[in-house]
Image (cartoon, rainbow, N blue to C red; front, side, top):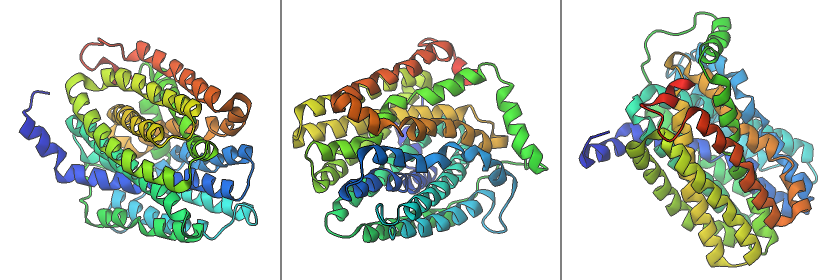
Length: 417
């Protein structure tokens, strides 16, 4: 891209990017309410580490969201339009589910807690489906890199608020109050839904529900290299995801308080997220999405290795700050390129269903591969566990050789999907 600095800044600060930012925040906030914060709650109650790892299975809806995505593509609510109408319904249900989760208990009401957590994950995954479709339909191909970066920035800020802010609040108030506050923090997402413009994509792509289910899949799997791309999406972030799944129990286990974790995550993670998102979007403009996947994937592995170093150092605020900053910076850039890549290979006629299929696979490591991480950590020790996470990322990087070589020609890999 040859536009000058002024035009790039104009795109960054446009209304479309602001909407991507706020929608990203709304999607990121619920995620760790069924992971990091819930895990801290369970650890406070004395729940076994293996069970804490297994609780990630409540996030299974994130890996199956492509099953109901055709409904969101096909049916149009009688208010606000196809995307914003569904988004308002999902966000309203999500707020109620988050509040209800806070009134459960991991010991006395475990079954009810699991049910409420699954509901949070289901409505959160449904919100993701609609937001991903909205972003793809409202941004041009040239804006996808920056738009994905702004979305990831908002997403990470939402995650930091729920994890960092939630953990700090949990030191001073009951978890029920923490979850009520987090439910209220969904308000910016609702306001964005009400005031953002509905994307215009032309004629409705499906005439029947059967078409809504089958046509997106036929369109995707008719492409050369479709299976290879799905394998890449499944494996690219698996090491980072496994490490992140146990980060909160790890920090607590080596002696950090919830307030220390929350304060460092909020302070260093916030600014590292800003830097990573903006740097990721800018670098993608200069070197393209394919090369960015290589560079950011390598840096993502470096960030995961940082957890192993911290395991050896032990309780050290400077070391924790460094690990958090590097992790947010590197994985933020890698995720920006990853999300932009997936958006670029979807057909706008079937945005919600195709994107849901791709992001469902992206969520598999977070749910399935993360479930036994507590057991792995007990068997290998924290240092050995995080070293194993680094090696787990190698197969995904090797798949880049197949469809995204360093010198692929003009956007070759973008067409290989």
